[in-house]
Image (cartoon, rainbow, N blue to C red; front, top):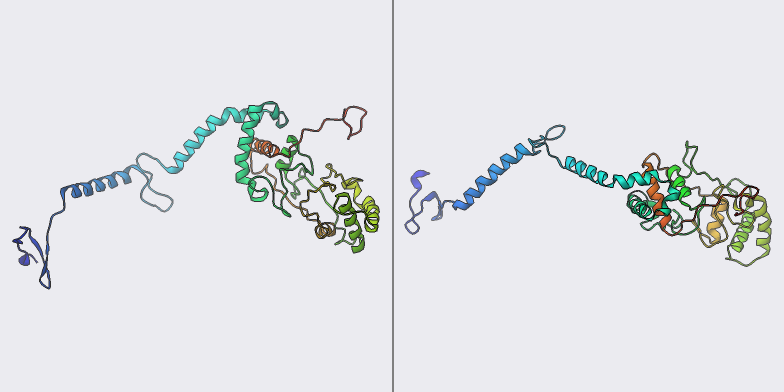
Length: 307
C-alpha cells in the first residue's frame, strides 16, 4: 500500500494509496481541535467509570469511588423533606382527628397531605375529585353517609374498611337477598320497590306501593327505619333522597332487593400509617359532604335526641 502513496501536486497532501477508477483519497489530517476534543472525551469517560457507578455486574454495578447513586440521592432528599415536615406531622399525630377543625392551619396542612395520599391510593375507585363511579363506588362529595360523615367516623372507616373478611373491627352490613333466597316472591319485591320509589318521590302512591309499605315495615324497616330514613348503626342507606349508589330506577332497585351488591372497601391500617389515614380523613371531610360530630345524648334522653 505504501508504494502506491504519493504527494498530490494540487494540495501538497499525501494520498492514502487507494484508487477507484482513477479516483484517489487524500490522507488529510484531522483538525487539532477535533483531536483534542476526542482525547478529552476519552479522559472524561475513564474518570467517570472510576468515580461513578458504570460497569454492570451480576447483582448490580460497580459503585465508583464517590459511592454515589440515584437511589441514594433520592433517599437523602426524601429524608430531608421528612425532616422539614416532621413538626407538622408530629402535631397532626398528637391532635385527635375531631379537634383538627379547631386548628385551621393544622387542618389545612392535613387536608393538603390527605389530597396527595388520595391521589395515590383512592382515585382508582372514588375518582380524582371524590365523585365516585356510578353503580360501582360511592361519591364522597355528598351528604349521604352509611355510617356517618364526621371526621372520627370517616377515619374509622378508612382505617378498618368495609366488609373485610377476618377483621372483626371492619364495617359490616348485610342486606338479605330477598329474591335469591326466596324470602319474598317477585310480585312482593315489585310492591316493595314501588313503596321505595314512592318514599323517594319518584312515583305516586298506588295499590302496589300500599302493599309494599306493609312488606317494608315487616322486612326492611328494622334496618332502613320506618320511614326509610336509614340506619347508621347498621350501615343501612337512606332511601328517601335522590342519592343512589347502584341506581334508583325500578330495575336497579329490583336487582338490589333481589340480590344485594355488598361492596368491599380495603382496610388501610395495614397499608398506611395512622397520620396518613388521619390526613385522608381530613381531605375526605373537606370535599363537601363532611358532617359535624354527633352530640352525645344527655342523661335521660333518647339516643336520637339532642340536648
